Image 1 (cartoon, protein in one colour):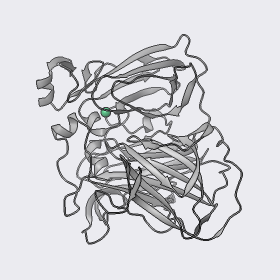
Image 2 (image 1 turned 120 degrees about the vertical axis):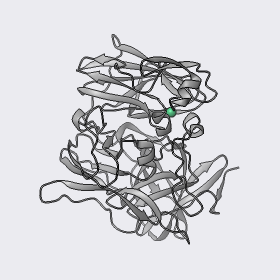
Image 3 (image 1 turned 45 degrees about the vertical axis):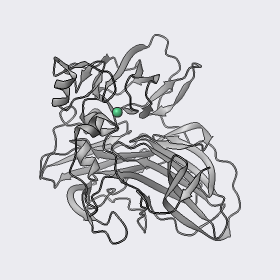
Image 4 (image 1 turned 180 degrees about the vertical axis):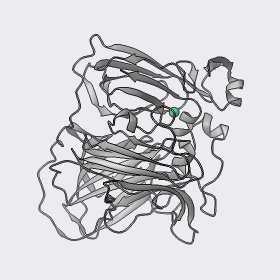
Length: 458
Ligand SMILES: [Cu+2]
């Protein structure tokens, strides 16, 4: 029996009031995002403000984006006392704009800046986050959402971003400073004790039969987020930014770290009822946010149709494609006895000492040599196998992939996918974006502790 729990247990809810904070550009066409330490009221009630690291003094940072086909110019200013860099998650950017320090750019030093100039090729929901010491910097709040609007957006009454995060806070609502401890690194990552949803903008005047687009983004470093929606019915229309060819009826909504799901739903609750979002844990649902449904009703609309497709090539066939095995190993209870780290074969004990306990194809940490070198336009099949005791959220930079389904069809375009323990699944993509690209687990504790590799497209 599933029940909704309204007591504030491990969870709180928080929502910002007001208008969408879509950032505006300066006279030179650049939007400045400054990374600074700041204080925000993260937890409601009698808690003190939380010291965070945020872009432009807010968490999430300012909403960025624009219309599909436009360019987005962003100047990152580093107001921190350590290096940083911003990665545009899921956006098919030029390699030099991908924001990976040491691979596509130099890290931005304190007081330094970097100008990103990005063509908005694809409509959809994306996000940006630090890619330098990312476990700590993302945990502290260095992230925000990118919304790229269709040239002809669908007819909805409210278009809302729902940013999910998971914080590990002290009783004084401060971020605990226990980053990178071996238990977190080798198990399910840095899991928090305060899960919340930030909704932007707050929907004013919800009414029966209104249509909402909800853009869910899981910004948590490590937590998988199973969600429950009440008071609405509708369809999943996009995953990881990319429209589905055929919208799906909403089933369980589970977002791994870095995944996005866009839904279009109609309010089925009547006046006096509510639209409610809950975090699901077993047969309990903990309310993250809820909105009252007011008097009045709107005429029902027709069923949702697919969003216009983005200009991304569909995989037609994997005949003749190159298959690259990606064997995920290591972690606690994983049975990995040794792996190569920095060119040296090491026993697990030595790997633990170096904080490198996860491996891809027997290599912990970023290898000197790429996993493969693709010719531009080549079709690559990543045959991933999770030979560990934990789920992993595998992310490919620069290109979206499609799962090769058992019946030979291809799944929707994705940039991040959850692989559960023991799963073996294949993902195909056309290597059409030249440069050096990362493949890594987006559970940032696992990435920090070795689960990463890279490839080139020439
Ligand atoms: Cu992982």
